[in-house]
Image (cartoon, rainbow, N blue to C red; front, side, top):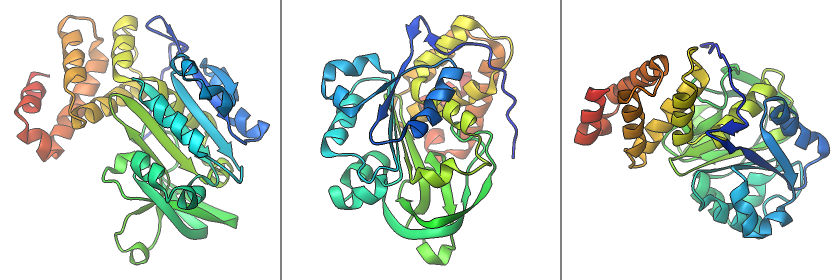
Length: 321
């Protein structure tokens, strides 16, 4: 597994003069489950506020939160119809991130609304494999799971339901459950968590979290910090951040995050962010080490993407990098 050496040289509570605020929504979680997140957020310099779902029934509350961490924990009831409506309305605002976590998130979805909400937002459906022993895999280049082992064996006393991911981009998989291919016969990928990112919003679902929380191989400090960065850093904030601070030491974690988000923006049909990235460099506002790292990554992705190669606009931009 590749090791990413990270030099964090800034406090991320303030970005381009804007105070970052993460709302930690306690929706039936215990105090210890909430502190799993808030302790790391506090230590890493992220301003956060623990709130109830009821507080978000007032839409005037939405704009102040750059991201929501919606924690259901081990609650027997997770997202209600009202909760889902709040999340959908919140994501209609630009540059917002939502993280939903809970043991019964997927289980409830199979019966509350036939899983339509989760299918639409996360491209996942309920799966009742109810495994006790299984292996989960992660990718070193997934910005949320950096620093974790690639293969983790889980042995759990209770059956663990997992979700069925029917999307097409492996980079969206947070934890992949390794099962016998004959079992699921290519009908999808069994997962514990998935993420979706475009240049407008970011959403992530982590289901059946107690087994994950108890895995010593997962450094929860890294996980929560990486998650928070992914939620609050949109592309333009990242570009402005690098341009403003002109960092001399390459922060590979944030550079990789910028690369990842630029690829998603282009794939989502927007080239504005890529143009902004190139223009800042042309104007001498962007540090060379970061630009070279991201540009090299874009060139490598271009080589592997027929869609990019066939797009004249993308091809022209890649040649000009």
